[in-house]
Length: 236
Image 1 (cartoon, rainbow, N blue to C red):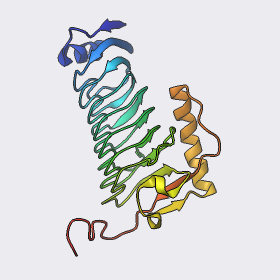
Image 2 (cartoon, one colour; image 1 turned 135 degrees about the horizontal axis):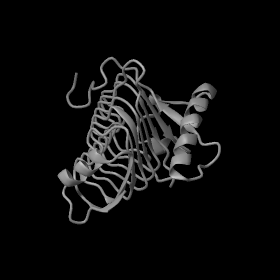
Image 3 (cartoon, rainbow, N blue to C red; image 1 turned 60 degrees about the vertical axis):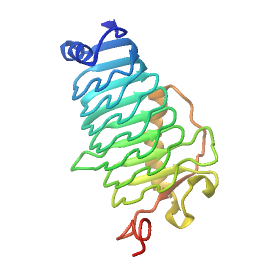
């Protein structure tokens, strides 16, 4: 089923999603918020620019966005997958606790913060471009990967992984200076780790219909401090 969302508000769009038996497509999306909130068991396709908190509390649906998404995409997502053929704003995957989010382009600040894992659930976020400040802040579980496919000068902003006490952050780097964090906080991914990364990257490339460079080099952001905020805001 396909609709034009040009004159629809969020409530109307979500009512159509709830009633859909499976696949549903919306054209002309223009900043409507909370789209597909809590949805499960559906394949939802959105064309346009999605508003704040699209895919929040997603509980098993496949949400595919042909365009960009604003802030808080996948907020507190529980299960399912979000694929974005574009870029997204700040606070991507805030509090995410399961499922996968694949971003083809860039994302803003404070993405992946408060992500967590529980029992068999372990969320995964892959960003094809770059990300800004406080990436992975307070990370407690799950996996964050930044590919920097356009090979910008820095792949992430300041304070990557600040306050993190669990999970994994992998940065694709040709030079350590691209990480914008001290080299002492990074370690090169070993063979076993690269096997795990390549498995999920194969799924990412397939879902986005792109070809990734061969033999990419990844570094893991080391999360080992008992006091990760020591000396950041005040002397202590």
